[in-house]
Image 1 (spheres, helix red, strand yellow):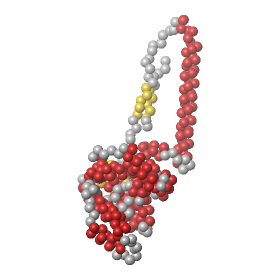
Image 2 (cartoon, rainbow, N blue to C red):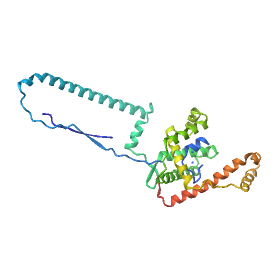
Image 3 (tube, one colour):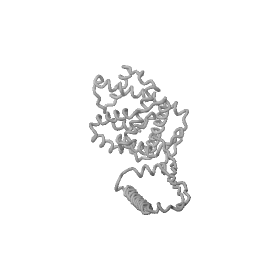
Length: 308
């Protein structure tokens, strides 16, 4: 009589202090919880109720060849199953080695590794861990922006400033996303798709966008995530901060234009040709001031821990 068996298988940005993490802004013109899901073991029971052995009547002896054939078939299927499992394991090991050598790129093993060995965090915001990869992405994008403006990103003082800005971006984004979620805001797939298509059109097509993303070292997955964050944050800010009531006066426009044209090395078109652009710039600056003040109120009650 075969003993019952029990098998347990484990299942397995330069950025202002008010800036938030937004790759979409960088493309068109710039957080995440690091978690370690615990594998929940699933028990597969193959136990069968034990049946007392009893002598077969003579009439049943004619079934013996059938029973033997079924038993042989089960044994053969078991052998095939073991062989298939060995081949699958060997194939998985081969793909893992090839991916680690950079010869193939599936991303599957990176995700599995991330689950088993969570990525170190760069900062914690109200207990939420923000991955170092996000910090590194922000740092690299800010360094590119600084270099495009003539700054030396390798200079220690500049590098330290970029680091601080990159951390500020992470913290600000996390605080705003947390506030948005607490307010019950949910971003739909349709909103993400519509925003993405708007970016594609603004860039002149998928190929142009792909080239721009490669220049900024951004993946499509990362872009879609940033789009979701952008919509989440903007939707919350539309209700949390009164941005629509901002007014720009004629005196402010005149003063701003005068400050720009006071530099003899700068050639600027007549004011009437650029008045709308000047108003937009002033309005944007006022918006950032209001958003910055709102973020500061969030920081007062927040627990922020920088880990790098």
